[in-house]
Length: 261
Figure (cartoon, rainbow, N blue to C red):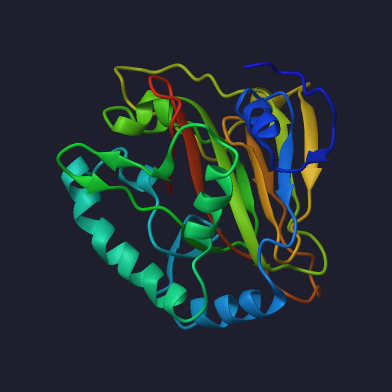
């Protein structure tokens, strides 16, 4: 991966730009108008009635599940046994609004030569993809890259990883994502996943940075191996930072794109 972007701006979705983002040659892709105002409103209303859980010191609310939460003290069997319930919680939101996951897969498929779909594990089935988050409180500096986060899982065989989010409601101030161009390359000790959340600022010291603000109805994609953080909503601002997203990995052997959360 390069650690220098060609241009500090957002790009439109195309095959060329998707490849460039996977190779970390550009900072971000934005798909404007991915969802209409009415779709965003119905999605927001549905997620506020769904089965909301919380995690982390900032008590980030979410619907669904994150695979990285299973990396240390839980087994692969534990993870895949919980996938069905996570999809059921997600289905409640989709049934009462629309399905942004399939829409995103369709959009990516239009500009990618190989297949695009939800990741699968031999003998277990599909991963969960499409975690819904209430992220108005901000998220600390972290990085996401399955070869380090998820050893022993099929998704560790990727050679590049993106994150994407659709924003269905945005704060009037704050909620900015900062991406640091310093591809995460931690030391693996005894094959155990390293800490990836709350990274020390030294890992991004001197790195090129790019900020993007959420836009209602927009999808933004970036290379999630780069450490990134989200600022909290400004006190007194209106609106919340409500979103759905997942990871997109490029399989090293087939060039297929696989999604999981």
